[in-house]
Length: 119
Image (tube, rainbow, N blue to C red):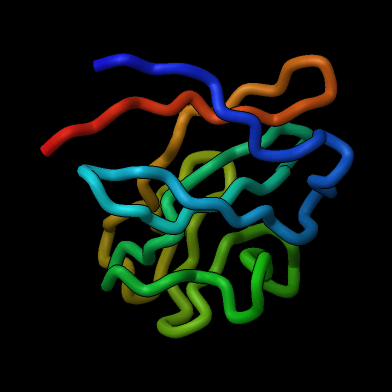
């Protein structure tokens, strides 16, 4: 499996507890929605799929945080996730967390580490 870095956005585009940046990744030959957010100064990236059913989390593009800016929330089911781990904290996620993507920040740019998945 080959891997490499893929530029997602400039670091300054990702505000603490603010709008997430949406993008797609290739998962087993199909484009899959994903997103990156900033929480406690660090960038985190996940597939944009609720742990309950494969529905996108954001109710408006990039709206992943709840009103408190402390949790990621599914707009359809109200499932809550920890922004720093994707762990299910409550609601209909039934213990199933978000699928994380490897993210790194280098010289004011945010990248994900992409893998070439074939399956």
